[in-house]
Image (tube, rainbow, N blue to C red; front, side, top):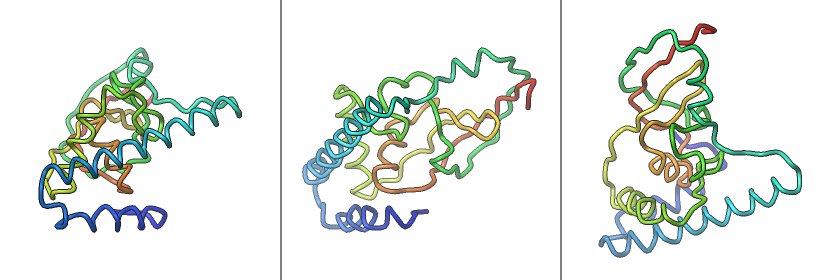
Amino acid sequence: MYDNTALIRHTIAHSYHGKLETVGQARRWGVQLYWQQRLRASLAQLRVLVNGRCRHLRNLDEIADTSISGRRELGIRTVPLNQIIGSEGRTHDFDADFRPLRSHNMDRWVGIAAAQALGAILPPVELIQVGSAYFVRDGNHRISVANALGQIEIDAHVTLWQTHNS
């Protein structure tokens, strides 16, 4: 569930599990993790200015404009985080790596990080699958926290959108 580059972050994150005995401790840890991710997002935006390649979340509306021929519920699946490339409505709140871009997301983000640090089981995110790509319908913050903790996959309730091309 974790890749090699994220092993240290995973170990650090999970070393707090059990040591963070209060919600206050977990929230303080979550705030630190949040600001670390915001800094990484800011640095990535600076790199975009230098190299000119934009790395933003794709908007599901761009796909929805193509001909959707059908929709089918696939149920709960385990989805690789690197295949989640966009969102239904939060494309300006997160960068392409689901790092937070705006501070109005902070309380929700920190709450999810704190809950995970305390061992809470979070509900599956809701994703729309178009081809091999996934778009977030609900769960942008959970995906962002999962990425920050170095997870490589997440449980999701998946709806397949079939296009005339697929």
